[in-house]
Amino acid sequence: KQSEARTAQKHLEAAKELAAQLAAGKVELQIKVGEGGKAFGSVSNKEIGAAVKEQMGLDVDKKKIQLKEALKSLGTHIVPVKLHPEVTAELKVVISEEK
Image (cartoon, rainbow, N blue to C red; front, side, top):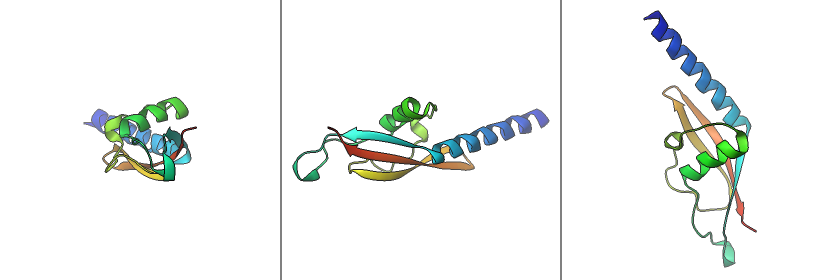
């Protein structure tokens, strides 16, 4: 039981550390935009997960990224990432116009 508790504590600490790294950084994604600033397509949790790995060097499972719906507007979005039952990080996702 003690080893289970130690393992659980290590997972919790790792999740807190990852949450701090996610909160401190941001990922930037670009989408195509038509006339009038209307976005073509959207940004999904899969794309956010890939961007986190590429831009921040952190491995976050796309299933942990809790988007209510795909992001379809330009600007900065705060996306919750549930890393552990007790730890939810806030990831800043900046969506800009693809040039």
